[in-house]
Image 1 (cartoon, protein in one colour):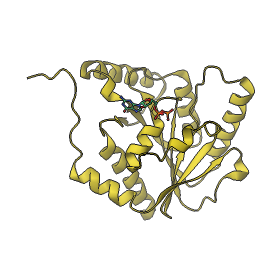
Image 2 (cartoon, helix red, strand yellow; image 1 turned 90 degrees about the vertical axis):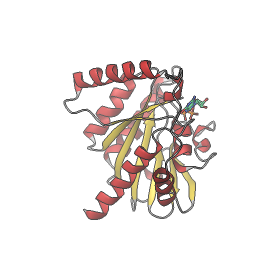
Image 3 (cartoon, protein in one colour; image 1 turned 30 degrees about the horizontal axis):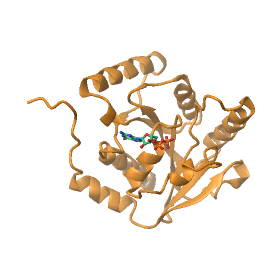
Image 4 (cartoon, rainbow, N blue to C red; image 1 turned 90 degrees about the horizontal axis):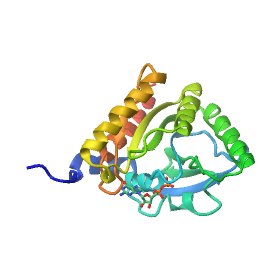
Amino acid sequence: MILPFPIAEPESDAAAELGRKLFAGPVDFLKGVVAMDGLPDADRVEVCFAGRSNVGKSSLINALTNRKGLARASNTPGRTQEINFFELGEARYLVDLPGYGYANAPLAVVEKWQRLLKNYLSGRPNLRRAFVLVDSRHGIKEVDRTMMTMLDQAAVGYRIVLTKTDKVKKMALSLNLALLKKELSQTWDELPLIFESSAEKGTGRKEILQFIDDTNQKIKSE
Ligand code: GDP
């Protein structure tokens, strides 16, 4: 029988366990940063999340950490152009980069943001991994490519996360994914790993958590 819409797998015990392990302690909003001198000390590993505004970044961060209102802070007026830091216990920072691609943002604002972002990415030794979120319905845009290029230049390893996959039929998702890979291969010899996710259904949570956990293990052994 073919179901007309995909149904997410119930969260596996492994995903739940990983989530508990990674986000066991307090998970709190620390601060919004508008200039390099506002960055917290680079004394712990951090992973960052980037994506166009409305891509589903806050929803994904909330789903990953299992804290419903956590990333709401990033979407409150005045905070959308800041680099928002969340503390995961005393061991890690989770960083929510400002959503890019505001259609009507004044040039001066965009330039200021780009400068801050560039400085942040290239001057943050403890930034070990990034996620570039792409809406599974809309595919990759020029701003996403710019973001990926900046990460390449800063030598920060990243993965792509396709968001809101529950909004796309399975067949369309496969087509979009194939198209995305084709587009990426025009620029990049080696394609980044791509996670499919839905904050709504919990899809992809385990894989993304696993990747964050692997990063921690790898860093510990370096
Ligand atoms: P942000 O601007 O990137 O932080 O985006 P938000 O997380 O605020 O999400 C933007 C909109 O997309 C909101 O209306 C969310 O409810 C919706 N959304 C986010 N993730 C998902 C998802 O996985 N599935 C569905 N159906 N909607 C989502």
